[in-house]
Structures are given as structure tokens and as C-alpha cells.
Picture 1 (tube, rainbow, N blue to C red):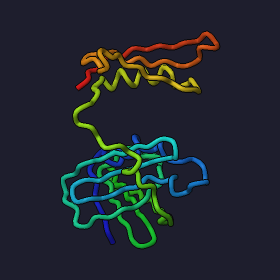
Picture 2 (picture 1 turned 180 degrees about the vertical axis):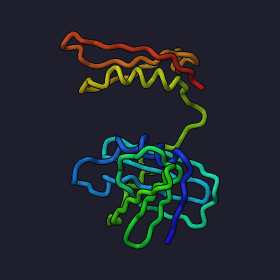
Picture 3 (picture 1 turned 30 degrees about the vertical axis):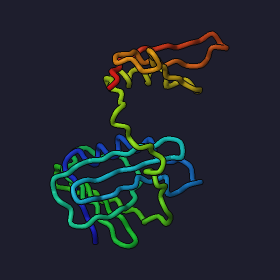
Picture 4 (picture 1 turned 45 degrees about the vertical axis):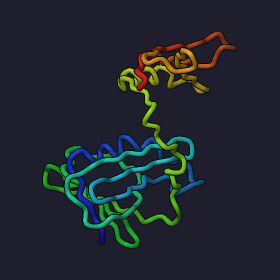
Length: 192
């Protein structure tokens, strides 16, 4: 049996960041899972629903002896998790949550059959010569302000001589111009 032990807060990060990106329908049952790839010193959690994609990489201290992949279904997290042990055999994935009151909860998933999407093909190569830096808290507030809008949201940046300005505001705008409702929000960003 292959296994990995995750420290405090790691399963919470995986669930909180990826749970909204798993598929909700039965058309693609494998995408109703979070794929975990366990490497020597990191774990990678991937969730995709066919429209949205989330990849979370977490480094951890204990060098894992064996690399493996498994699938877990999102679940409600109890309070007081100290460590999480994820172990897999040929048929099942076991997630054991060790709690601070000396108890444990184990979730068991039957290993789904099929091939998960190769998300590395979806993502473009990172261009180290160009990146955008912004305050994540401001961006979250900006996106939250248009979350009930069910249409396209456009992002605009300022250009000068065909290049992005080094310090430019990013503008998010909804496209409800035909109704007379236009929402524009500015967010300062730095271009590197």
C-alpha cells in the first residue's frame, strides 16, 4: 500500500482551493474528483470541471518513499484536523483524518476507472519575461462584486507604444451595455 502523511492545514488547503472546480454532473464522473499526484517532496492537487481548472502544489517536509496518483471526492472537513494520511491500494483510496481529540475519521473512495485530463497540455508555458502582479485581496473583492453577473466580464489594461505600461490599472467591466448597467472596477497592477 502506498501512502503519504500531510501536516496540519494541508488537506484544508486542498479542499478549500479545489472543491469549487470539480464537475457537478455525471457526464464526466472522473472529473467529480480531485486528482492528487504525490511526489517525493510535494503533492499536486488538480480539479477541472470542463470549464474551470485549479492546480495547487504543496511542498511538504517528509520525503515520500513512493510516488503515486489517486482521486478523492471533495468532503466536508471536520474541525481539529492534526494530520491526514492518504493511502491507496489497487482498488481503494483511504483518507484518514487524525483529530486533536485523539479520534480519527476515515473516508474511502473506490478508485474510478478512466484517464484524467492532461492539464499540462491545457496550460501555456509560463513566460518569465512578462508577468502581472496585483494585490490578491483587491482582486477577490473585485471579482466578488461582479459574481452575480451571468455574462462575460472583460479585463482591460493600458498600453503605451504597443506595450503594457509598467504601472497600469486593470479594469474589469461587465458587458450589460444594452441594459444601461455598466460596472467598471479599477485595480492597480504592476507589470514585470
